[in-house]
Image 1 (cartoon, rainbow, N blue to C red):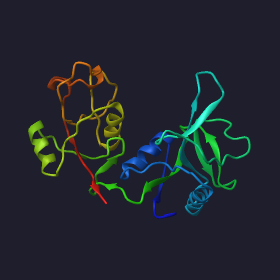
Image 2: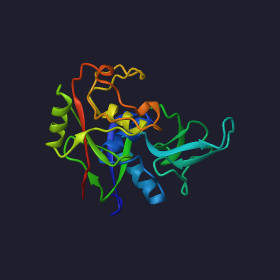
Image 3: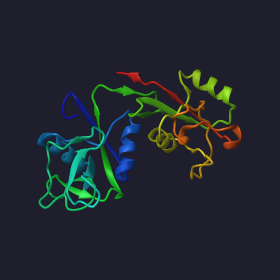
Length: 238
């Protein structure tokens, strides 16, 4: 911990920028670091160096002002804020749409291809929402999720979730859908989607007239061979 407001932890597994952010979020709603001063930059650099990393992702990406223009604005992805503090290496950012901190050149930042696999350091407020053990937190919804590999019927699966203070997962947007797929041992096979994963049961609901087709409910015949389900509940606050 650098101070009383933020804590940091290391994820040794290398990930792309997007998956690194998802990995942080799955740990009680953490994020890739937002660096607002030199002290924080040095602390993260030292943490990376002490773990033997040459470089780590930080939570900044660029946002071109319009298609085809070379000028771009770098911002903190989760907070959607422009960078007020910058520690770019000379001539950087020269390429890539995501930012990484380099240990080898004194903790300066570089633009990097977002699909590069790098180690991850996550940042989380010292007071935060926490899920029960083995549950995964998603910051966008501020809810906890867990996959159970058990081929129960809908009512039985809902009762199983309720016994754990939860409900069958309700999915309200594409980001939540992607997160559920990423933390589950199996995905959802839908006629209009291209996932080739083992089906899981989710909580279905009736469509509202102005909702996009993506979020309309499916008939039982649309999803087959359920082998598990996902429960969703509110986190504990510490």
